[in-house]
Length: 146
Image (cartoon, rainbow, N blue to C red; front, side, top):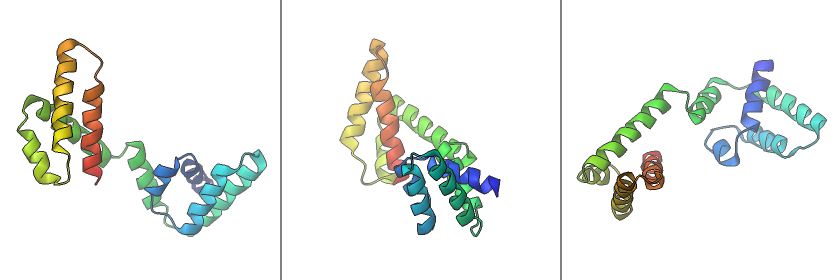
């Protein structure tokens, strides 16, 4: 029971966007949102107990897996992360990789990718902070999540 309550605490600690990515029953989702709003210590504690009670009737394993995925500790999340890093490096080495990205993601903004590639290469050449390099990764990650 305390394990489920700890899992509930992890859900309460999530942002609303992260919480939306996890599939939860509606009553549990509302209880978590209520707990996020409570400022008084005792009310918050009681709400966490209520969340634990709601979770007793659920299979908690999908929730654990989704939390692990959000934290990036799952093997699948790590594999996706490394694959995106390799794609970014290949793109920086050869602009023709944009064709692969276009084939895999037809809605990709190819002009934006080309511009970020040019800017990242220019930053590296000039020894500037890697702002475009990081932005390129974010764009590739958003394409992968679609």
